[in-house]
Length: 52
Image 1 (tube, rainbow, N blue to C red):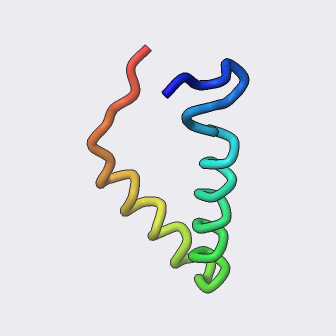
Image 2: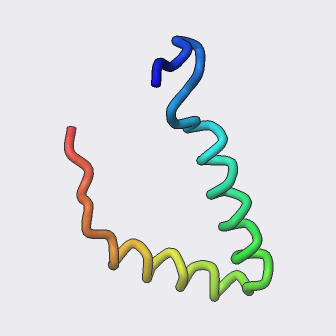
């Protein structure tokens, strides 16, 4: 299949908006302390380390 050069195989903006909406729904039901705990737990669970 030949793709149109203007057609994207992966739309990064659409993906990030979807992820933001999912996270917003999760966090909207939590208290401030629960949100902080959520991010601390996620940070500790990260296996991919950024490299420059």
